[in-house]
Length: 535
Image (cartoon, rainbow, N blue to C red; front, side):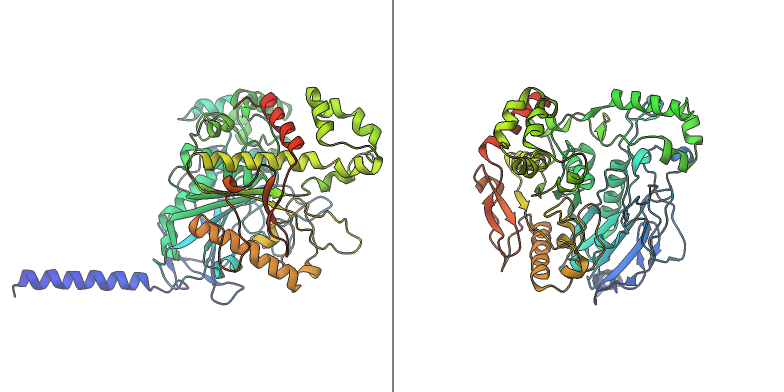
């Protein structure tokens, strides 16, 4: 045997041993990311390790305020992964709890906030577990990846690597200006929060295998504003190749209803006006504003057509089949608008009819046909339904558009009415009501407005069983693109459902069930044609 042959064999053996050491590395020990070593901390569940406060981009401060996220700085030594990074600038709760800022152990807030957290039960790198990346809701103005309700121990125990991120909120994350557009190499401005999400997904692509995740099987999921962002990523050319699946809970690219997306010019003009009112007449003066002044004096514009991340109205993109071919699981809750019942005077049959033209314009007659109310009790019952049903119509449109391009697509309607504490408003299957079940975190504090009872749900066999069911559907979908699995009620794909059917999610009753009526569907078909465009 020649020296060269021996050398080659020794090299091959060394490589195999090195591969084995990587494949069976202790995830609890320091993990080397592209930027440095990070240590983990025991999760709340046995067998789970959490890695918190990992920077995925440079702090967006100073001249980086309102710029696309830049690469994070590398560090030496081992970074402590036991603590969350600060959440992005936002208002604390007023008359309610903001879980991102108002908990006893909230990490504080700062413009320096582009951090992510992950939970894994993998025994070593290379296990290729499905990855789920959470985008929080909060009207684009609040939230954080450190909120207790989105901690990932339970989902990690079910076999995924769970990632939560911070993205810039409010005017820090959604703001256009002519000078910002001019300085951008893409001649675009506005969707900085979406850019943050893409940067986080790029970090996941580069690093998640070290934590036992599969970089080629990433599901982005979110609720409300996060659901809208998830859908936008499904339609954005900048997210192509970063996600394989997407879940949107109560929201998609049109927002929470049916409307066109804001064009860049309108967003720019709005910022010029509000900035001038705040005493800032140039971009330099805006960047010189304190973070508190930006928070309090400038306005968030939400997602918009920026010409780059969102190159056109996504209704056009999805209608013409040019979105990313990602599997989707989408839906909404049966009583999304229940929180609004406390606002304004009680609805009566007379006021319901009298306000129809103001509410629906040229579609007033169609609206009253879809939502008839002959008595005050009927008027009160239907008053909040159009908000929920317009959202439900939007979610089905999203699912059907994905099915048309050959992706797996699944539609749900969450109708379970969780228990509420005595003396608290019973909002039923409210906006955000599904979140505790999705994360299987019934003991965690709730997020606004679905303030269901922790005391009556945690440990309750019916509620715990339903949380196991819902979270299992979500995990199965992340794993294979199909939510079905052993022991779960059968969930038909959207193209196997009748026009007035959805997969109803309700404790003890989950299965194919009723959705909108034909009159309601016809009404929203007309609304879309009038307000967005014909398909």
